[in-house]
Image 1 (tube, helix red, strand yellow):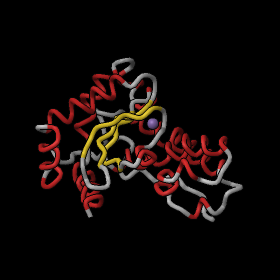
Image 2 (cartoon, rainbow, N blue to C red):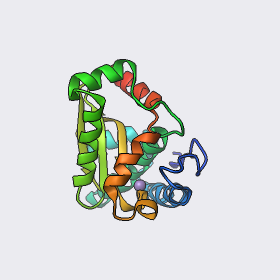
Image 3 (cartoon, protein in one colour):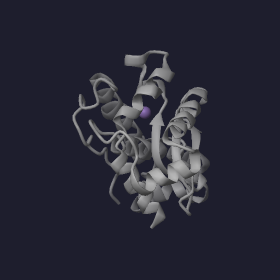
Image 4 (spheres, rainbow, N blue to C red):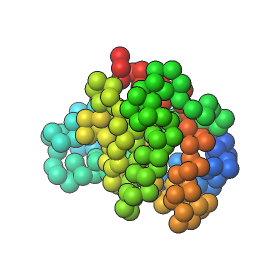
Amino acid sequence: MPDFTLPPLPYDYAALEPTIDTLTMQIHHDKHHATYVTNLNAALKDFPAITEQSIEVILINLDTLPVPDATRTAIRNNGGGHANHTLFWEIMTPGGSKTPTGALAEAINATFGDFDSLKKAVNEGGAKRFGSGWSWLVADNMGALSVVTTPNQDSPLSEGKTPLLGVDVWEHAYYLKYQNKRVDYLAAWWDVVNWDKVAERFAAVKG
Ligand code: MN
């Protein structure tokens, strides 16, 4: 039963400058994400059968996993932290396309009106999320889009939704550069979204 491992960043720590500063990327990936992985493995050490599954499947089935409540909470927090951050690194890139294209763009326009309205919904969700959490563009099993937020490291997977894009609004994601100005971080963050990857995720849901 293999342990979960910290995936390497798919680009350099400095690659998302100036939107996300190098030191934030180093601490966020090497310390915060690494700690979620360490704690997830610790929580699952007595449940080897569960570690045979992907973290996504584990989170989809979170409510029915045959584990004590304390372990379920540890999986929710640290498994969610692992999955959420793995996605976060993947859906960012330096110099990516600045807007969604193709079927994803059509679905965004049909659901939200236009791309700016999607950004507004995600940013408002992130700004209003009290304390720590995430703001997401998600799809249901039929591919219908919506914007949701989750507290802490809760994953939309545990609510039956597939995250296509998510922005981390924990202070550790932005405080060194943006301090208390979460709204400024949210406004700037769209510059580093990897729309090719988000479109791939949408295509996978649509099947
Ligand atoms: Mn984070």
